[in-house]
Image 1 (cartoon, rainbow, N blue to C red):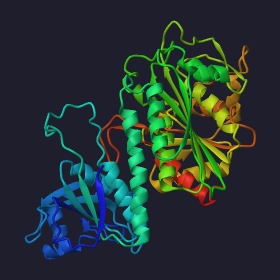
Image 2 (tube, one colour):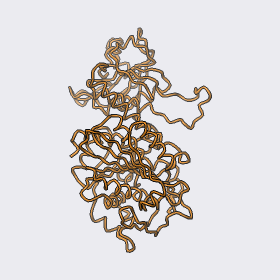
Image 3 (cartoon, rainbow, N blue to C red):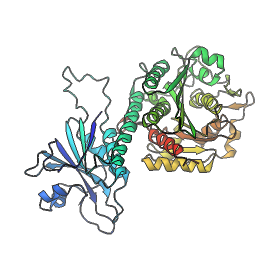
Image 4 (cartoon, one colour):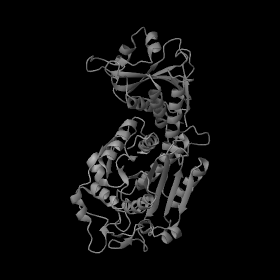
Amino acid sequence: MTALTLSTAAVPGLRADAIVIGVAKGSASKPGGPVVAPGAEAVDQAYDGGLAGVLETLGASGAEGEVTKLPAPSGFKAPLVVAVGLGAQPEKDSGYDTEALRKAAGVAARTLAGAKKAAFALPLTDAAGAGAVAEGVLLGAYSFDAYKDNGKDGKNGKAPLAEAVLLGGKPRDKAYKAAVERATAVAEELNRARDLINMPPNDLDPEAFAAIAQAAAKEHGIKVQVLDEKALAKGGYGGILGVGAGSASGPRLVKLSYTSSKAKKHLALVGKGITYDSGGISLKPAGHNETMKCDMSGAAAVFAAVVAAARLGLEVNVTGWLALAENMPSGSATRPGDVLRMYSGKTVEVLNTDAEGRLVLADALWAASAEKPDAIVDVATLTGAMMLALGSRTFGIMANDDAFRSAVHEAAEEVGEPAWPMPLPEHLRKGMDSATADIANMGERMGGGLVAGLFLREFVGEGITWAHLDIAGPAFNEGGPFGYTPKGGTGSAVRTLVRLAELAAAGDLG
């Protein structure tokens, strides 16, 4: 993990491999070429105030994600200046928003892979900005190379940026220090979630995931309980058992409990943890299996959020439920037409074994409901329909309470995770009526993501506020990296969940 420090050192005399500065596009009221952002005054001065012109000559426009490299001015200890685009220049006195800073820092950190030290001279005006830059650096510097042979000396691949110095920060200011410490805890746990998502399924089965959760819980003082096949059968968890029935790797239900002596609220988080999804007997077609190791991204997000809450010492009780199973076809697998008796007592006719995530979540939601938390939020790579609706970078939010759905949406937008509120149309519920069981696990094809949300709502305890996050799109990035988002597992929803826990601790979550 990249080391972070705050510094008020002068840029010219700082020994580093590179100096990172920001450059913006001209604002609507002041169009034109690139604009050098605050923080880079010393560099601009060394160019006799002509840095913007030099950057324009080199093709820089200030567009978001753009990187322009140029030699550092004479007399600077660092040999390189890296100018990273911040997007549109903000109107007077509004300042750069935290997401623009986060993205710029992430792009720069990824660009500087292999460097030992970089100084970030981005526009920092407050502690929130410092936290955003710190978070962007740590997320952008992420790489997953555990399964790559980099040679005995490790020189065949570039190591992540080793150290980042945040210039303009105030090392002795409590607010700045707290912001960087928060960013570090959240980013490290989010990157842990990314590691889990990127792990191949032959190494991360339900048992292995549970063991990793147990080790982290022990390290951070979190109470943990793991139900194996025998305990699940004894407890009547028919959904989780039914999904895991076809695999040689047995399912698990992991409960992580972080408690605070000062807590006044209890937030329950439920994550879908299908460590590999073949579709079961309803086998996925060719070309749809290769990334199905990511189908446990919801559980990874919940796991990371609970550990982050513990590391931050939030004054709220947070319980995480990881519903872990591997969905495989075999002679013992659940068949289309089978009926499962869920933990709630309801029966479900399985019409499609590839609609398995809602089955494991249903059991975990009912278990979470039994503790009567103030709110439940579940997270899942649940439906391809949500990707069709919102694309690959935005997750959908459904809820049984409009105000809570809005609160979750605001929290997601605040931390920089694109999300969109979605409805739960009552007329779609009838499509899941079954002549054989209480409910079927499939309904109308159109609006499939909403149908899945309606199914989950059936397993939320009466009177409990609940939201469902369908992260099928943004959980796994199959394209190239962008901003602070890498190729592969992204850790989607971790920051939203942590922010919800913070709001609950402050009594601002309704």
